[in-house]
Image (cartoon, rainbow over all chains, first blue to last red; front, side, top):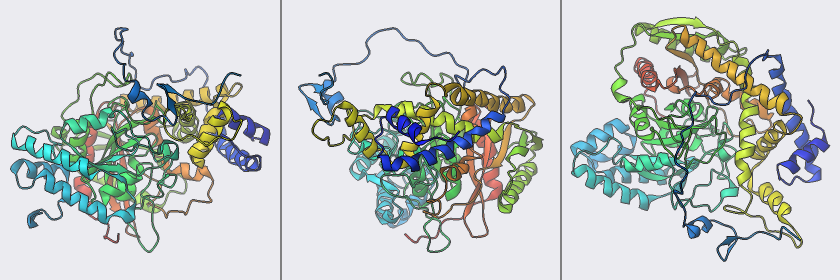
Length: 95
Length: 497
């Protein structure tokens, strides 16, 4: 399926990646090419096939629901672009 | 450094282990030999963060441990670590600008295990950004360069573990860690004439490795020999409570499995891997590999894996879908890059500008493809359909194994290494075709190993791939060992860097 410019704009928005208006046609073109390649999947008869959820049949391990970590606020904030008073700082979210 | 250890950087892990244990070389001298080679190898752009202080400290500790006896096999072995592995206090940025300056407060399970076994970290290795690429050209650090060349052109070492492959092939380190989501260990190994194994999904912990596509990613060793791969894989494997998909099953002695005896074993040759337009040289190499295994007493049988053709399109739905979810965490809040904001910009502008500046074009494209195939209205048509096709691809292998096939022999790549920049104007799908022989293995969760088998007419290395039964890395490495011994590949790139 061909991706039009409106769809490319919408996908960029959903992905939270800023794309300039001027770059949208090229993006739409590239995405169309990639998605066109995937059209081959329509040739496969998948009737009655369950979508794979786990490549190796294994039961996920369980553990006791207890705290195993914590009290490392300084470490958690070490790499933050903007940390203040023990918090991650971001632009105002609620007016 | 004493004269008798000059060139120790060219040794295999096995040779170095034995020399270290006999006291013929110290871990410090071995490490120095690699550090010297690394400084002389800047033209390859393989090591992007050098850690000589850490290396020498670890080497001194290894020497103390070796002096006490009972040191593990990896004790004192100098390694390069792919930039995708989080290493405590050392830049770990997945070759992306969005993680520029990121220094993890923790150590990945794989590097922890290697360091606990006494291994030495020389530095971090170049790769494609977030492991998305087949030529190392999407890296924020610039291209890594293949030590092999045929003329003045610089060739790709492959990707995404291109820095790892270049570093091992150029003897800047004894071995390196790699990761493989669709072929990122095996394709660069084949392009540089080294050995690379992707283990069964769940064999190696993914904890602390920057995630690309979590249902496909596996780490593995990239080495100068199959024996080295066995030794290093041993140290990387094992259950990890911090990775819920890591398998709690015993790890066999991989090196002990290298008996060279494969008599009566059944090797499958899948007819669907004989692609249209496959170069005659690749076809000839494959035929030679078949003869080598036959000659060693294996039974070679033609098999069919009918859904092979659909592996690439399925992969390029599933991997970007998972990536779009995994990479949502890079939002400029908790770590990494944050864009400078204009007056009045809110949190949405912060996300959008940060991600536009931080991610390169290929990563952006894959995030958007993933976003699209997971979006309302397309989820069933693309993502669910791809997961169904994935189930069929896995079933193809299961049926072959149930029929008595022990392992499968295929080419590793559709060509030898190509020139850096040569694919710049190509459609992204052209680059994806590099993974045509390797992605099936990730989709089916199987172990696969690339072994160097010969040179093409230009003098560039070519490799074959062996695919094993789930959890059967031990036998898989044994078949690889037979192939390696019979091929007798000893060629090295002429030093030009």
